[in-house]
Image (cartoon, rainbow, N blue to C red):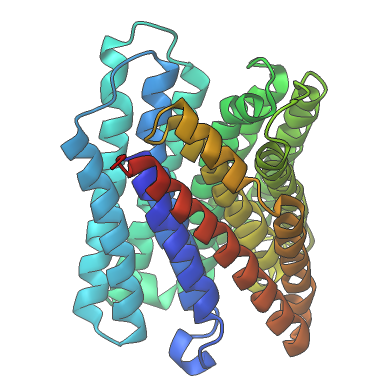
Length: 401
């Protein structure tokens, strides 16, 4: 289930990059690529992986497969329906998609928490609480957007203030909190280090979980003080994740086999964390500078580092590690998968990071050449990685003879 969700998520990411080449009027500016990447790619991956990780940490059997499939299906279909409905001006379809998306988020929460009642091992309460808070924040953020698409006057009339709140709840309060919380146990696994709940781990969850809704509340009220306090908390959370990763990296294993596979998975996660730091400093820095004014939010300023760099690289790197680790196939097949997924590791990492850098500079400046260069490099890196992942999955499910 987790691998299937990741496969769908990567498909959304490829579609998001492809959407950047559509005419601006068709893609509604940056709206379509961003929502394909976040609502489609990131949330579908989270819906598939979150229940798996929560059950694994608690040493408990995962929730019923039908429940997990329903969660992934509702999120993915809902995101697709919203994208098609908004672009095609089909309000009914968009609203139905928003409702399905929120229902999928709620099902994900049930699938995540249910196994903990019969847990045999430690449930990692910090991680679980981070997941539950993140799901609550995206439920609020997605519901606000659905009401806006439906044309509810109180939301429509105040959209200039509410739009930044919606973005902060979804991008930072949900996606970034879930990925950051997951990395507290996944990053040590990938680099071969012991999982340790250091003070920096707690500050990662607290900073992101508390800061994002404070910023959102500051925009809605509006209150410069509340928004700036939230921005400071988010910066502390992001920096704490970097500290945690650095401390973990110092105790990493020195792998002697499958160097390309390890290089891409580890390098992808390290790059993602670096882009998170850059993106959060930009996003929170604008709030510190402008307060709760709508000028405190700029999607062009954060799309490159936070969405493509942080979210995109984290998904692709995680998939690279997970396919041979938990995917179908025997040990010999997994060894072949690792060799396959290690192909051109350095070149793919360089291509993806160069693309993120080009978008990070080009989008705020409105530089079409840099934006086009970034889109081409990201497309190339994603297609190369997606092809290798697809072949690796097929290799695992194929039966001899």
